[in-house]
Image 1 (spheres, rainbow, N blue to C red):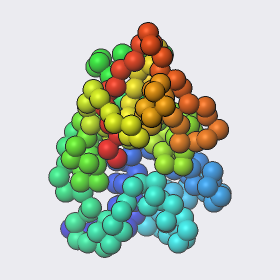
Image 2 (image 1 turned 45 degrees about the vertical axis):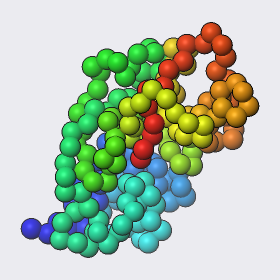
Image 3 (image 1 turned 180 degrees about the vertical axis):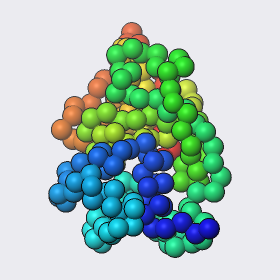
Image 4 (image 1 turned 180 degrees about the horizontal axis):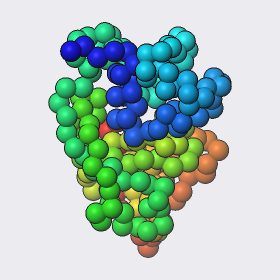
Length: 199
């Protein structure tokens, strides 16, 4: 049976692991004062978001093909996998969060790269505008990265999502938000690559 617009909105939100309140807050931060009740009404097909709100929702939910996601008889995602989801915010400081068993299994469909091995929930605004606070990023587990690639790192006991830059000789962990200074990786530092961000 074809799913309604609201049900598909709810499905996309749940795949990101966000509550209705978190989505309302993200919309508010982007200039649209939205309450949790409004998100709930959209998902119940009681009301509709306006065009600008809908475009922001598509950006947040990582919808690249709107017609396929909302107008086709089948939702955008058909092949469902279960992937581990770690919370970077909780784990920063422990150093070994991706080696342990502290994660939740979440359903991931075709909107998640087939290369992804696990997900990480971002904390803070250092990777804005590409990645926002609370967003899930999907990661392929690998131990090396090329300069310019974004990955998940362990550096001196803390977990980070950053872009690796090696052109200056000293490897640097670089934020996409220019308000944050690069973090140099010096000889003798504890440093490890957990994987490459693939979505």
